[in-house]
Image (cartoon, rainbow, N blue to C red; front, side, top):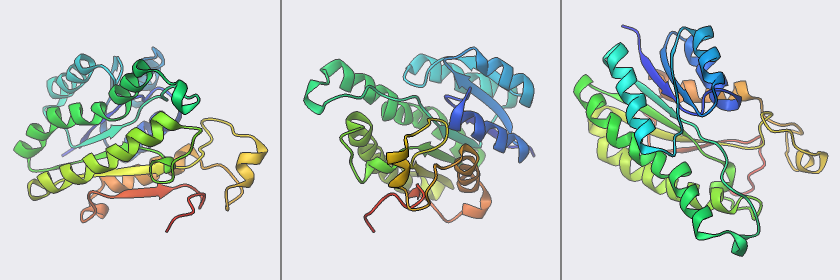
Length: 232
């Protein structure tokens, strides 16, 4: 039986890398992105595609409906997103924070509401959320992201406990500085490995967490950051 995976923000960067890795492992894919580039990637991978955004509840509903219409099941979800607004902490508006909430936390809550009944009925499934190393080592460079992805960690643990007996797992991947966004030499100098991570390295980690090889891992936050996080 072929497994079916949803990938959001899939047209470029880590999302596209995840889509390619999962396709190589035999998943049937249903992809979503704001960019029309998602159609070209879907054609390349033999996938279905929807132009939409993970911060839009209606688009998430359409994504799930597209998967069920074409495949009748959903085995895996990769919740990838764009980037929220950055800026000085106290200069960010309420609108900036509310937009970040939709983009970084409610996207996961909403997709969980949609796919959990499907996964329960079919006997299980797995979800991976692309988070950030800054979730547990907050940086003023990413105030909205760091704050709300710490909240994502709490939601992930609560949800993991709620659905564990249904054979549904959920985990977060916490990337460091990945090569989808080029960093300056000063930033790279802070990374113990002395380089940015590769999109493909994140994708392989995501694929592992979705696989049966990670069948006893749930509710976790896995750092894939080249050692830049200082806390233990």
